[in-house]
Amino acid sequence: MVLKHLENQRNLLVEAGAPPEAVNAFANVLLYLHRLPKADVEAILLGGGKRALRSNVEAEAELYRDASLEEVEAVLGSSELSRKSLEAILLGRFQYPKGSLKSAGNMDQLMTLIESMIDNERTHSVIAEVASRDLK
Image (tube, rainbow, N blue to C red; front, side, top):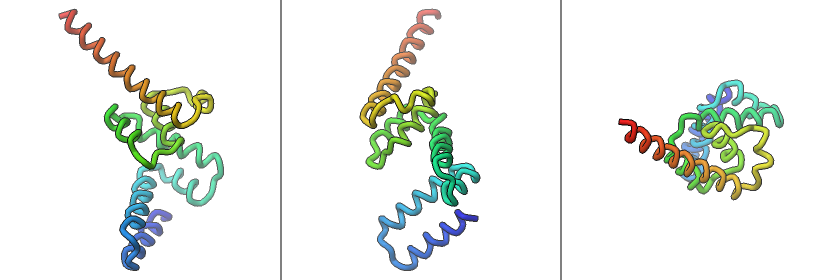
């Protein structure tokens, strides 16, 4: 119900002649919210404090669970990257321990950690490929 109301607001922005950047930004927020479980959307939009934000990171982590390394790299190159997104990538894609996120450092350190995990995964893939060739 809340998302339907927000979609109507986006349509009103279009009809009012709002700048395309504003309409696109609003549409991107709606797209993101549509990907979340309904309970998380309601908690975020209707209030829920830190618990809602925590579940938001966990919900976003689910979006990255099956992401390819190239998709993760594309997100890292985004100009609108947040700490929460980096944490979600670590939790979802790389199964980084949730309790270790706060000690992982600032955003630059988180990016370095993710880049290192990408490199490690690629290295392991090459090793596995070479090993499987040697066994044949």
